[in-house]
Length: 68
Image 1 (cartoon, rainbow, N blue to C red):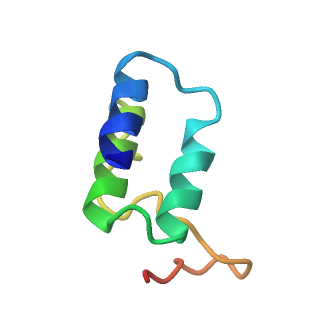
Image 2: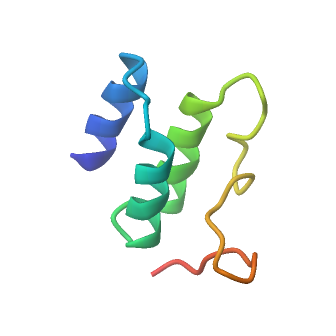
């Protein structure tokens, strides 16, 4: 349900602040890695940053955030 809502917002170009929201939902475990990658791919289709794992959230040390 959350994934579909975020996807619909991106498709409707309602993207102000959505990248940060997606990061928070992913970090909180509300989105799977596949859902996160898919949404980022929709959000940034031309610049390549939507590639799997390309823009994963990081912790305060710049390390990839852990799932779960």
